Length: 607
Ligand code: ADP
Ligand code: MG
Image (tube, rainbow, N blue to C red; front, side, top):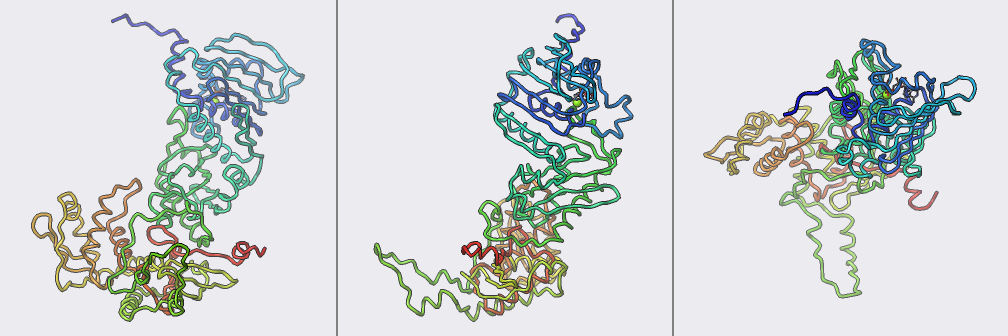
């Protein structure tokens, strides 16, 4: 082995530089942050070929005089703090004094800058290549700073090789700009990629203008303003109505004291505020700025400063969750039709088929093989039948029973957002059509609505507690893996009125189910429960009680395909004004969709 030698300073710098400038997007971020720290109100960003060839940031900030222009390339040279203790109250992005030194160590950097308010045309031009100053002279320049980075990683072949594709890099740069635009609506940003403008925002005091600019009108339309002042923090910004959601949390953008950060605990808190207003696996869109005492935020966790550590994290996340919850509770969340397809995903727990004995209208119509060109004209009586399907006597009794069981009394605080509705009829045994004041048409998913009513009834009253012995206990066999899960669940199930016991190896005996469920469906419930518990979730797992309650509600609610009488439909609809969360079923699917009179007029071309 060779002898230990001190690395020459320039080699050591190249290695240290890697921490800050691991990729072109990081450089863009550092340079824009410098411009923001310099008080710029206009920042232009130019990137060519994924940033490997060229990155240029032009700002109209405070600029630098000739002394500072040279100093700024020294490692740990910063104007932002003089003592580490100042980190507690820092309000700038920078403080490490590392970015420019690191970037210049691995690239060719040309800096043109002129201090604000300096007389004459005198600016400074400085060229630094691989950490060595190659050129320094006075030059004419506008106030502000212009940093040009070329030949990135020219002297670090290993790093150059590992660069991701151009598109990945552009996407990252775009993401960084997006976050900064939203955190700083008062700054105008422009991004040019290969000389084509990709993004431009105007200076504005209204965040919504910036959001509209970046994400479009449709997104902005679905947002609810958030604003709250608490002892620990101030929150402002926007969150989406449940109708606007995404598969990932990429559009949950949170800034803390102007610093756009990633924090899974804050993301989770926001998602939790939505509860069952969104299907599992869906995330809202949120643009929130948090202001809190700088002493509660430790920014010095990571060289790129994208992660922060929060003191009192628990209190902060809980407040955030509660504010999201409260904001949603104080708004009318009935989605306006027509909805676009991708806005809602189907639930993962599929609806149970209609009960045997209850009329399934679709079963009554055979699909006949018609000859070409032939038109199936229904007989007069049949046509009538299509519109007003008569419920069977047995079905009506069973539906009546269920509705009685789940009657929720009182008026809920959100009832102000659910208009009084008058049932017009039922379509396909699934959808209830209702008229609301001001000529609104509301379509209600009967199963989703009743499932939510059922769920609230159970959650509120512990109504499942009353177990009802089965005449004949049901035996269930499960493979060993499922059996183990089920065994652990026995106490929780018993508490909810599902009495189940082990019955030899991998077999179980269901002795009782909650009385509220009416007819026994022990077998299916257990099947559902086990498969639900087997499925792994990325989100915080639901409590056993919550899972059991949801499944009982889903299994027991009036099914799609159950023909309801006018009175029954009206009863379901009325109940939506009595429950606390009438807008979605417990799985996050909408219970009702509204067509305003204006929308109907628009669709019929009456406007
Ligand atoms: P830091 O931002 O952590 O202080 P940098 O290496 O990014 O470290 O910058 C070093 C110093 O150079 C800054 O503290 C600031 O004084 C100066 N500087 C950098 N960029 C600009 C700019 N765009 N406008 C004015 N001054 C700048
Ligand atoms: Mg900096």
